[in-house]
Image 1 (cartoon, rainbow, N blue to C red):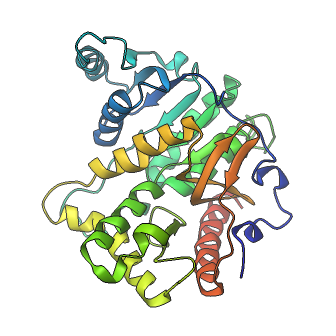
Image 2 (cartoon, helix red, strand yellow; image 1 turned 90 degrees about the horizontal axis):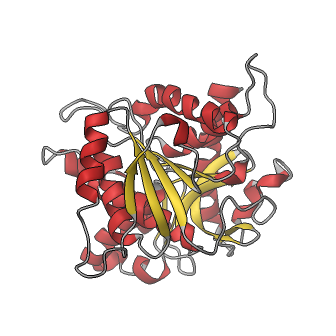
Length: 336
């Protein structure tokens, strides 16, 4: 049996679970600011508004389109429970200079998503180059502001962009690396939640995958190297790979209907997983393991990120290790 923590080794020791810091107060309500109000950002905002009343003190929005921002502020604040008008968090239009006056900053900005009908095999990685340049801007701004909160990445490709945010926030004006920007434990990527939910969708509809609903786990990136395990204790490699393939390609099934697949990602990976993070609950997100941001089940505690630690079958560990090495290679290509 193997353990996920073996991937870290002795590198980046401050990224090990519980060895870093806590980017927000676990107790009490938090303020969240969102940049990017496209399909994903707008849907995520609705989810946070409706589901986050217990943990959010307010939501700031910024998208570079004042008319859209004012529309969202106007309409979102007309959503309320009768006679319980403070139950849901208020939404406020904010300026660029206010983006990091919060407990959690949510990056939903994106240059573009491949159009329906485009012959693109990996829709998520197709957005990397453009979104990498966008997130650099906000990583530098976070460093300038001395931001100490959670830097949450929702835009695709989630896992490589997390590394870009870390590296760029610690790069000075001369281009040299430093250590005054975001810390590894401040950054989390939100893409694995929907992959887990997609696997659950198929498991509910095919008896062969039923074990996933009670024994299954998801690991890895929000993309082609995803790892779905039908069960940890009764791991079946062939069955798990089949379920993984279904989850990976679920976004293509939506695109075949003529629509872009953003509702489930914005809510399962975005709103729900973010709120679970802020509540200190177990959830799926990508955290820094030895310099690579990899998705797994984890939670935020009073001492930092706690990874779910469990013995993994050798065949499953090898799949996770392959995903880890591929993400490491992508990061090395860009920053090595």
